[in-house]
Length: 134
Image 1 (spheres, rainbow, N blue to C red):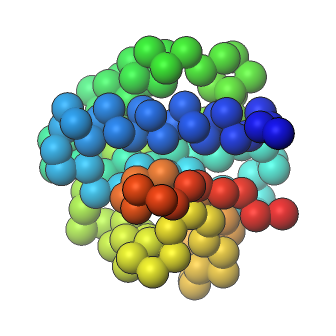
Image 2 (cartoon, rainbow, N blue to C red; image 1 turned 180 degrees about the vertical axis):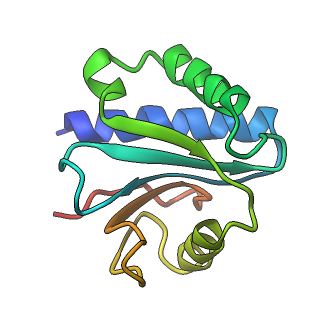
């Protein structure tokens, strides 16, 4: 049975694929959750050579794609913020190293300022599906 969370992740994965097709090279697209945030609120991190880091232009571009995939209001509010980061950002570099061996959900990242949980939507292997650990 498909849950609301599964549908949400499937829509986000479609957004990642669309952005990767339009804005090569998409290095990272995923959700991160801080342990101090409400349990159902996630930040969406995006890193692409063709999206200007920390820019409103990049945020608008991603929001446009989220709306195209028809994220419902209750899905949109799950996203606390959208952050476009450069590929050489420390967090993006560390997450990319992690995703090379463990696609999907990553837990237990180091230091304290790193997110508690990560759901990687891009890069993904064809067979891998993003998952939310319980």
